[in-house]
Each structure stands twice: as structure tokens, then as C-alpha cells.
Length: 572
Image (cartoon, rainbow, N blue to C red; front, side, top):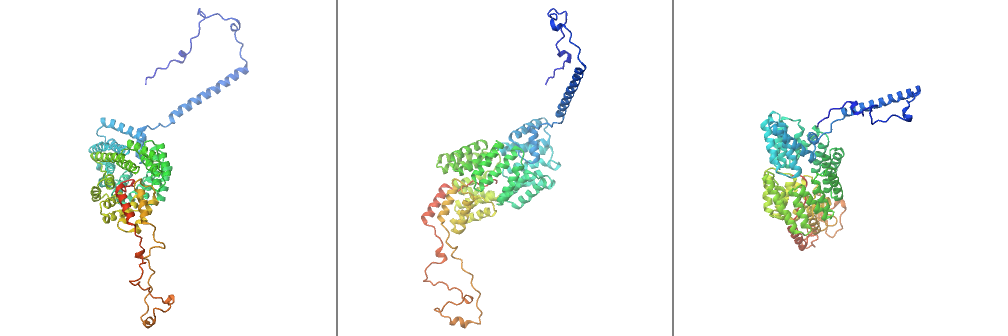
């Protein structure tokens, strides 16, 4: 900015008029007389006032100078994004955009700046994750490789390795993420920045023990909101709802940055949804969006909860908004199933077609969306194709609860319920409180005539979240009604324990007892006699509830026609 030179103070004053100036009239009347000399009192009062005024002006000037010197400089968007990354928290999308632009411009003139290239690559990964623009993953890979070419990881460029681990997780290549992360951990055991990537990798691989250890280590190295968030997710995956809720609330209370706060509120919304509290979920998602309008995942969470409240028009609008801002295949599947539940089959097919397009586009960018594609195929496409996709995931050691549940359900839908039971049970045994997992397990057990276990799991699904899916929740209630109520008084097959055998020294007393004799005392009672072949069939086996054929057939047809998909738990 151009600064004009200051004028002399006297030059800013108007010039004194000259007596010879012809435009100036001579003084007349009172103005022609000189003023009287001031009194001593007046002179002292003026002097005092001048001193006070000068002091006030001087103090004001000093304060102004001090304020300008001591006031810290307001951080710009680039500095805010860097501070968020340093703290392990998400940056706002606007700040992230500024950081990407700054790093792009810098590396153009400094192509060998390894830290800047690593920062740029990691920012690309975060941008793609937050916007579902998978094309940025290729840019991230290129920037991170350039960083390692400028300075290998062995020479201190661990941040590029961390970026590659985050990139592999985003592409659902959890084995690669594990390798990159463990390489960093081996060389820099106290580098806290690698642990979020390791936690995601272990979770995707279903290694609960390693994920727990990594979460605990992260909390030791980096206390604060990021560690609380990760701990809440750990508790959630283990089914410890109260602990997860308390920790998530603490994270939300302590969060200060808008993006960090919004992510914490979104987590509270997810927990409320899984507890079957859609009103609370809507409130938390709304709070997240009010805190950060770019928390697009909350749009989909809000849509899911609105559908559970039968506010279907609002739910459809929220899903459409979410897909516009964050086009993830999972959201297309959920909207398609919502349309199907409303009888809008044409709109459902349109969404399913979009899902396939999204999966294909993501595959070109190196992102594996096999899990969501398999969920779609199992219920609305080709179950055998779903089995093939998920078997490949399992062979690749992707053995999370989500993959186990999906594989078990796909096998059941493909007619292999016995094998599917093993995987569905494995998903439930993780402890996660997921209504869709319990529903899938209950339906498979019902198909295998294990009616008692089926009733328990179907009841758990309905109790956990009565509206966990617009398609599957009604089917869960229908299957539960078909099973009927359990027999009064508990299972009829349970018999009292047999008494101890009598001493062999008293055989004659037993032989003397006749059938028509009165019953012996309780202390000398004999084992109950087995019912004769001619006895009425009121045994436990006869009392086993049998489902009417028509009801069972109707429920199975409904299951096969409408599908049993449900929104799965967040994460791989």
C-alpha cells in the first residue's frame, strides 16, 4: 500500500489573514477592542486543565501503542488448518482448501520440499474423505511419493509414511495401511500421529486386540479430544454403550474448534440412533450441522433418523442433499431402500443404478467398495455374487464385524444358511450392539429351526432399535410374530436333576414296593418312570411350538422379495 508523506503540522492549519488583504474588513465594535488580561485564578485553572488533557492524550497514545504491540496476530485459514493437523483434529473444509492452495503454490517453486509435499498429500486424503471425491486419492499418492523421493522415510520423513497409511485406509486397503503404520511405529515409537491410521487398519482387519492396544497407546501419547473420540469408538465397537456415551459427551464438551465440535456431535447422533432414539439423533445431527455446515455425514444421519420417525418426505430430501454433498454408495443404498419401503420401485432402481456407478468410479481411483456392493447384491441383486465379493474380502484378512455379518447374510440368501450361521454368530460375538446384526442372526437361526435362539435375537434387534431399517425392521417384527410366544413356564424339556442312586444293600425294599402303594417320602423318592409308548404326547417335544406353514411361507416370501438389508454400523 502506498503511504503519502506526512505534512508539517503547520501546513495543515489555515494561513493567518494579512491586514493588508483587501478582502479583510477592518475590525469594528467589540472586536476592535483588545481582550482584558486573564486573572491569576483563570490562568492556573487553564494550566491545570491543559496538564490533565495532555496526560489523558499521552495515556491514550501509550495504550494504543501497547495494544497494537501485544495483540497476537489472528491465525489465518492456513495456520488454523496446520494447528488442527498438529492437534490431531479435523480442519474445516474452508481452512483445508486454503492449506491445499498454499502448499500447491509453494511446491511449484520448491519441488524438493519433502515436508510440504507430505503435508499436501495428507491434505488431499482428508479432502477426498470429507467430500467423497475419490479422484483426489491419486493426487495424494503422487504428492506422497514425491515427498519420499525427496527424502526417504528412513531419513526422517515419517509423515509421508503416515500419509500413505491414511491413504490406504481411505481406499480400504487395510493390510497396506497396517504395514505403513507399523513401519513408522517401529522407527518412531512415540510418534502419536501414526496411531489413528493404525487403529483404523486394525479395526478393518478385525484385530480387536491390536486396535485396543493402539487406542490405549494413542491416549497415552496424545491426550485430549482426539484420544477421547477414539476411545468412544472403541467402547462402541465392544458394545459398552454407557462408556461410549460418557466418553463421547466428554469429547463434545471439550471440543473447541468448529469442525472438531461438529464431529463430536455427529458421534453422539450416531450413538443415539443405534440406541433407538431417533428424536435425540435428529437433535444431535442438527447441532453438528449448525456448528459446521460442512459436516455432510450428519445430513445422511439425520435422514436415517427422520425415516425412523415416519417423516419420510423430510428424510428423502435429507438423503438427496447428503448425496449431492457427499456422494457415498452407502447413502444411495439407504435411499433406494427407503424408496422401496414406500412402494416407489422405479426411484429405488434409479438409486441402485447410481450405487453401481459410484462403486465403479471409486474402483478406478483405487477404492475398494466391495462391502457396500455385496450388501446391495445380497438383498437386491445376485446373492452368489455377494458371496464371491465377501469371500475375497475374508481371504484378504478383512475380517471386521461388518464383513462377517455381511458374509453370513449373503451365504444365507444364497441358500447356505448353515455356513452363514458361523459368520453371523462371529459378528454378534464381538459384542457390538447392532440391530441389523441381531436380525440377520435371528433369521438364519429361524431358517435352521433353532427357534429359541432365533426368538432371542429377533427380540434383541427390535428392542435395540425398533426402526433400524425401513425394509428389514418390519420383517423382523413379522418373523418374531410368526415364532409366537415361548411356552409358559419355560422350556418343557427341562427336568429336575435325578437323585443319587440308592445303596445296593437295600434291593429287597425296592422289590417289595408295589405300583399301587402310596408314594414314598421325598427323602426316599425314586427316579420318575419314563412314559409308556401309549401315554399321551404331552412331552417337551410335543410342546415345542411349531410355526404354521402359511405364516412361515409368507414371512420367507416377504424376506426374499423385499430383502433384509439394514444400515450397517459405521466403519469397515
